[in-house]
Image (tube, rainbow, N blue to C red; front, side, top):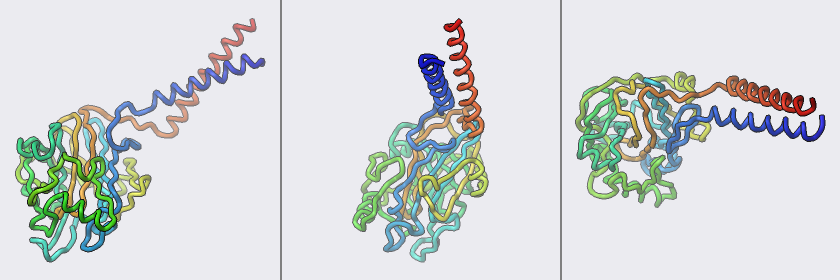
Length: 300
């Protein structure tokens, strides 16, 4: 086979492989990190405040991840705070837990969306100070501050200052710690719990094993919190479109936010490795076959 024939085969093979790779790339992009169908936001590993300890304590949040299928949303949280909460005699109930998880589809900052009652909220920690009666999905949500009754920070700026003064790096995952999306100053301005809302759906708690089977892997980002908490819900409980979701501890000793989107009736394809290999091999064989046919025609 002459050099022209070899180059033709190599070029056609390269184009085939490129086309195959392009064809299997996910076509839906988000602001966070997409991996195996999960959209991740990873927080600073040294901004959780537990007493005098900055980083790595009970209130360290490591990451949050969200995955969707055509009808279901899955949410996973990696942190050191268990669903049982953290015992603290200075808290009103003697226990500090997760606040509620908020979704904002309005495109407005959190304070404005709250004033308009356009937030969605999820109460997933049954033992927290939420203003709604049961766990589940809520619409027309307004938020309230519960840091005051949980020995917490007065505002986000105070949290940032304390963390930075002790050598930590304050962060909120997909948002900077100083992002104006949240009110930064003022007295008890951290809105981290549902005040009012209309229940529109239930959640199903998921085990770490179930989450792992769904492809969740916080370890790839070195997010190694002692707790992985997960739950799912029907996507019809929320609108489609872009959102910012955020979660704070009831004391605001750490927080995390993630940017993403829901698309009703959409499922992100996640091809298996065997499928990817088969697709590449198929394109390559087709490409080589086409090249050989061209060469045969030229010779004849």
